Image (cartoon, rainbow, N blue to C red; front, side, top):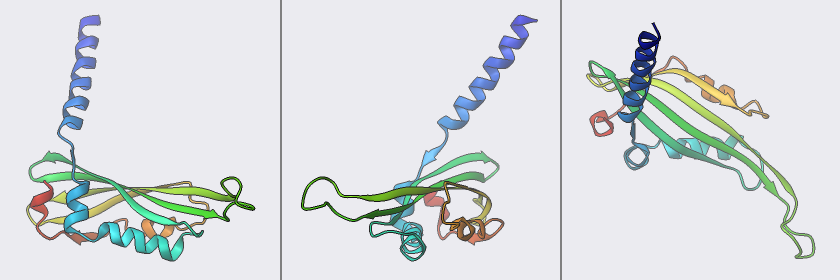
Length: 150
């Protein structure tokens, strides 16, 4: 009985490790061949707060899920930051800063290059700007020449 439970545990661990081992970081290719990073930056410049705000694409990961289907995870940060500068040239100044983290989960179909946005998680959304990203849930986007990301 113990051996059987240990065997199941080892199988589960192997599945997790092998699945994550096949995950591919395609962030560089996404930045190079799409405008996703620019759209994130533009959205933040419009909706984020502070004089040092910025939207950043952090990571895009693609994992094969079988039969030409791929799981996609996109991480982005919407930085809300304000700095008033130093007082009399002394110290680092005063201000505030917080980051809204966005994690989007999608399914990419290699046969037709359609990406369906399955779910979006928003963390630390003090401004309520997450509704912009949440509005993408369920939408399907055509990804031009998606094979380069697979």
